[in-house]
Structures are given as structure tokens and as C-alpha cells.
Length: 231
Image 1: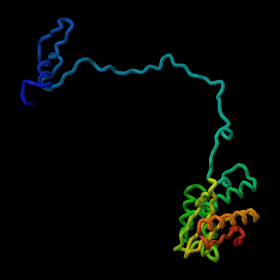
Image 2: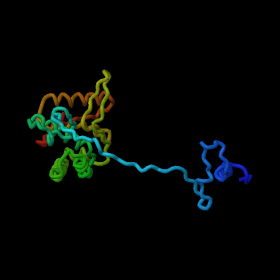
Image 3: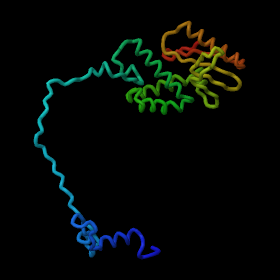
Image 4: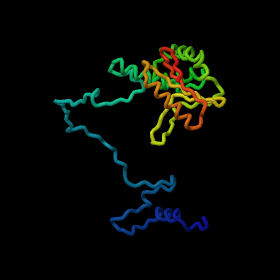
């Protein structure tokens, strides 16, 4: 306040205290609306809002349109074998294979098994009631050679890592283990044996050899029967 007689506050005060009415009969004497003791200016009244329901009518619906949700709504589920309305054995086996591949993808060593299974439960991919038996099953599977060697600590493990071919296509073995200059390729299978699986593993081997890994071997693991086929 460099000057007591200048500024917006002083101008407003002078206006409120003035008895002048420049607009004549159409104007307002602001001093009459100002309480100097309370320093309060009030002009006009705030109307009370009233709500009226007069004239409203009830609306009666003769028809109520609905949709067939099971036909229009598409759901992408994590585990089809638990939620799919199609109970065919083929679809169950495909879902089971995908689920087990995901489980093994999360496991580096045996100590990872409880954490991976718990995550699958929390993600809604397996029921809580199946978790304990799955943990016991996995521990049993990787307790004995050669599987135990693939889940040892100290190895470089690449899971579901793509190999880029000169053609632009890719190949993706389930597990590649590197240790002491040796490379082991492992593919997990959860169905019946097939000659195609062996050809697939031979191709993986040749790709790794072409990449400079001369000491390379491959093994098919049919997990359900716990059968190993070295290629």
C-alpha cells in the first residue's frame, strides 16, 4: 500500500460509502446496502430452488430388448480347459500343453517352482486346489537326471528365445542351456510322440551348430510319461 488513497480496495470503499446516485431514479445507492459495522455488502436475494413433480407420467414399456450375451460377448481366457464350454479332449490337451509350457518357462531352478505356481494361481490360470499337487509333480520331475541337470544353478538359460533365420522366419526352442562350452536344447512335449518332433530338434541342433556352437545336443522330453529322446 504505497498510498492509502490509491488502489482497488480504496476505490471500492469510496464507492460503497458514497451517497451519490449518478443514474438517478434507475440507479442504486450502494451505501444503503452496505453495513459499515460488519463491513458487509448485500444486494438482492438468493432465490430458493423449488422442484416440481407436477405433470410427470409413468412410462410403461411393452417390450424390453436384450442381447444374447453368450453369442455377442467374446472372452479371451488364460486357461481354456477350466473355462471353455467345449469339453472336447483335443481342446483340453491344447490348453494343458500351453499352460505347462508357461509353467516351465518361469522356472530356472527348482527353487522357482512355488513362486511360479503361486503366480499362476493369482493370475487365475490354475485353481488353488491344484497348486500343491502341481508343485509336488514338478519337483519330482526335475529331481532326477537328465532333467535335474537342466535346472541347475550356474548355467546360462534361455527360454522361448527366438532364432532368426536368413529367410526372416524364426524358430523358438523351449529351453537352451549353456554351460562349460556345451549347449543343450530341450523341448517339452505334452502329447503323443511324433517323428515331426525329432525333425524339429534336428533343425534346432543344426541352427546352433551353424551359429558356432559345435558341442550341441538336443533332447525331447515327453513330460507326462517322463520319457527322454536324445537327438
